[in-house]
Length: 434
Image (tube, rainbow, N blue to C red; front, top):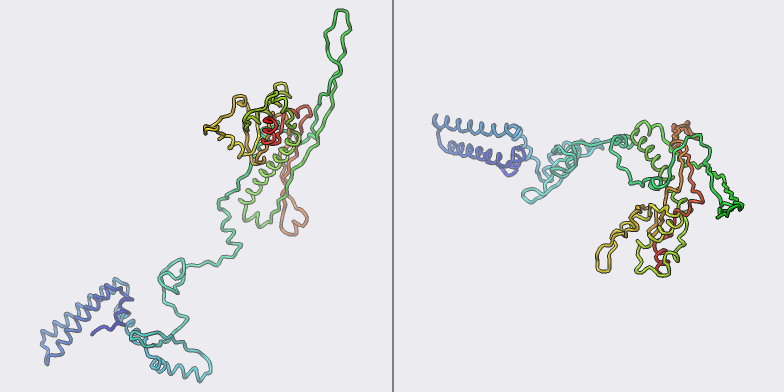
């Protein structure tokens, strides 16, 4: 019994190449012994028993190989039989399917599928084909693993809403946010919610003055005056709407949104107060006094800061500036100031008392120097959070959350000279070097 190429390929498909070779060798050995025995006119009892024993041993080896590969001889024989009958000429295949084709013709309905391929002999062959049947492939999470046409062993059919809810407990990566940095520099106070306005007395120019009085002379009269000043409150607020489904399914995101809302609202107050600080700051106007008749040679950014700090010191009779505010990039650019020969130049000691604060809220060349504690902000009560229905929220299964903060901010006109704006480095350097 010799194996054809098609039969050997069928064994390979079931057992693998190495095991198939062993099976082929055993079958070839058995076939050779059968031929030798048949060629003799008579077979002795000893030869018959030897042949029988050899066939049994070969069959036993084949069975062991099959068991290891998880198949059986019958399955191999079936595969070999199928392999042998699959490849037919087009005429033979049509003849083989004659009964089915006649039935389709007589019924005037139905269809029979065939597939044409090039056979092992190089000629066209045709085999019956069932498009609904597919050979099993390996278990995998994607398609076409192990061969084209193999499907994935796992798939998903999750609707969009459920897919979003699957990520409800995922970690949250937040955007970078600024801090309320100007509130750390100014005079920030907390007051009760019952404070209806901010109020303070502002001293006015006095009338009269003291003088040196001779014995028996009349002493000069001096009168002091004050003006009562007030500032009305402002309100920073935002409204955030939620659907009931979002609140139910994404509680963590809802908490995160409300937390970010509070941060963003305070940062917005910070930005509004910064704008007011800049508006109320005194413009640099002491270039002539600072030069003392001699221009500043090789003026740099440190010189510009020193000029503004000197104006603050002079305006306040020694209540010196404590902070120089600039952009973030400007702060770092100043930190790498070099001499003409490449050595780093540090700030002069006259600026040691100044904190250099850089923040993206300021433009590239903007400069403000002063005692920022002279600017006042009062938070009226704490942050207020209100939850309720807005407009058609109730009908639409929604609700709204309001976050708001009442506050005051002001600077006395008498304290304005304590904060000086450049408005920028370039303007100040031009003024003190020309």
